[in-house]
Structures are given as structure tokens and as C-alpha cells.
Image 1 (cartoon, rainbow, N blue to C red):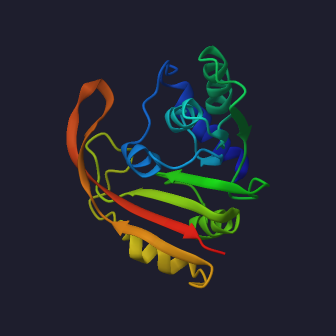
Image 2: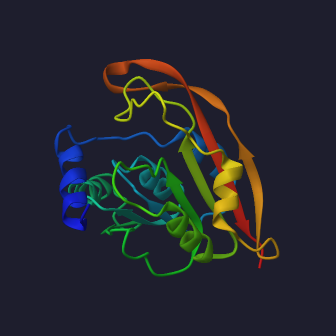
Length: 208
């Protein structure tokens, strides 16, 4: 599928739902980042912006990236309305073609899944290389299918965090895996519907 088709698809996804006014951060972000000193963060696939705004409120300077212009424009306006415009930069970026420039202390990739073509291993490897020494890459993937997911394929397979880490093929002398597990939680979907889901959590720290 072409970049144009991908942009059209994701713009349609966001345009079809009301703009969020105070989006919640992902649970795994809050539990991982609480206690870390703020720095420069990169949010890959920022969506409604809950993670970016949560980080900005805690002093992080966030570059929030999404392929959808609808998503990044909404987030830019939302950040300004919350008085966080100086802490959140939004950029429309197609990770299929390129990766944002710069060095970061934290890079988040929450549920970076798509029905379209995307070489995730290359994207996440680029993210690991964009970390400053001591910086962390947090990858949180679906480990189960929620009732409201766009992907209801009963044969869907979710690679484990260990498999994702192995696919990145990072030098252990430079990067270390700090967390690799599959915790469960109660998630809330559209209309307040709840279900138990599994997250696949991978946390990598650049040591050199």
C-alpha cells in the first residue's frame, strides 16, 4: 500500500471519532517513567496524545509523531489549550520512509500496530540508535485481542517481547533489556466497555 493510502487510512480513523479533550496516558508508560528525571522524549504513533501530554505535564519535552495529519493537528491544539505548547512538538511523519532526527532520553512506541506495510523492526532499531546513553526505549504491544480491536483475526499471533528484542539484533555491549514480560490488565474500550487484555512490554536501555 502506498504512503498516500496509509495517510488516507489513518486520517480516516481519527476523523471518524470525536477529538479527545483530555486523553489518558497508557498504563505501562506511567508505571515505567514515574521517577525518571525528565528530558527529551519521542512518542512514536502519538494518536490522541495522552502519553505526550502526560509526559509534558511532568517536565518532559516531547516530539510527538504520527502519520495522520488529523492526529498531530488535534494534539497540537490540545497541547496549547492545556498550556503545554512549549513542551510538545507535533510532527506528521511516515515511519515507513524515514525516522525523526535527534537524540532522546526516552522513546515510546505504544501499540505501533498497523494493517498496512511497516517494517517495525527497522523502526524500533532506529529508535534504539536514537537514544542517548542512559536513555530508554519502551515498546508496548498487544499480547491479546480486545473485543473492540480492529483486528479480530482468530489466528492473529502476537510476538513475545523476547522475540521483538531478538528481531532488533542490538549489540548487548551498547543496549540492555531491562524488562521483558507480559502483564495483564483491565482495559476500557469504546463506550466504557471493559475486558482483560495482555500487554507485551519491552524496555531497552542504552548503556553506551
